[in-house]
Image 1 (tube, one colour):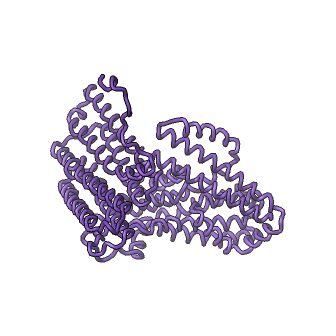
Image 2 (cartoon, one colour):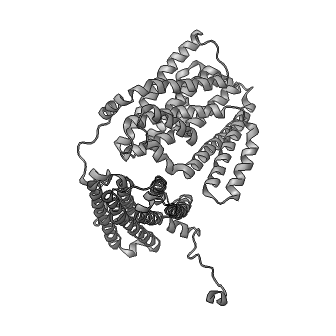
Image 3 (tube, helix red, strand yellow):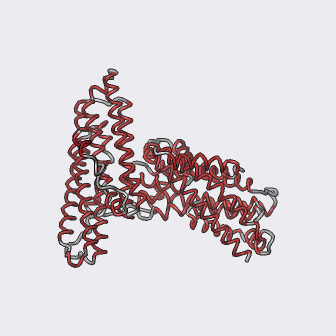
Length: 561
């Protein structure tokens, strides 16, 4: 009975720990996710890139999240392999620093974090304040879960079961290593897995030697997480997680044998306690960073040899990396197959629009005419996607499809129209404005350029979120996308007001570029509105969106006035 109680308590504490770590990461991503692009892609030296990785891992509470962000930017060509690998290696060290911070006795903070965080999340409307409240509550839940984890061990601490398992793991360090690797991968969080190992050593549930092997295994297992999560990305994106896995796995195995040999020979003395295990975890990641950073440049050639680019690509993939259309009018199939085909084509269309939009702000600085023409050429492909989707939906037999499926198909066509219009905004307005900037040799003021850059970053994040909504039909993500649309409207309005104030103060740069700045703001806002339209059907279906904002049944005399 004690074993059952232990397993239930352990599972509950573990799930709370995983939820809390995700809660913190979600709050930070929703508040500041759009700024990560500028931070990640602005690095030029390996040492600076590794420090950025350390900081981002501490902020996101996940080295896997840093690796996935890095892989995404590498896939889009915005981040080189050496810089990306340095960021990921720094992220591993940052994840280790999180363990050090959370291993302190901070139970006294829990009531304060819950009170302040709960008030900010429940009682305020400002998005960033609400997400800060989410972050504070998440940290409190992490501390609570660690306390539950310690208490879960009490029923079996004096039983024969735990000492037997602990002794076996201490004796067979390879098994302990593999258990730690599996634990980190299954939990999908190295922070949660290693915190559990540290807690077990702190309460003397397992000896230090077993804990060290578990932690080294967890370090190895955590490197598999971004490899698994990036499996659908392009080769340029997947090389970085695989390189990290090779480096991290090799060093973990070497350290495992060396540390256990030193422990058994007495060369390391008799280390004890959870804090010593945290120091060992920090030492492992710091030494890996120091040893691996100098080889980041040369490791690129090794990974390109191990994972070479395909020799032949389809024409449609050359410019965008996206596959050609899979819509087949001769093989519409049953409703489920047809709707899946439409979703794939919409994702492809969204990728084309993103490929047009991503570089457009940089053209305001460079004025590269060839790149402007390339963006405008992509608009032809976007238009072709819309034509294909219309033809596919028109060919669907209505009597076999049903009313509900027919409505879903119509919603997809409407979103395709929105995406096509968004592409027109880029090709016929933003790229034209960029060409005018280059022709005139004008520059925005520093404040104005920063405002446009932040809006551009926010829209890129919304593009990613819109794709997630399209795939998952998730209500929470749809609500978030709608809220982000409101935030971008506010940002556009605030930027317009600040621009007018700069004109009143006599700013020469603002005066010369005033028309282009204001038109760019309007175009960015319109582009984002089209992207966010994917959320509307989901919100309507769940009663989360009203047909109109107008107050109903207003007295006639008020209407007349």
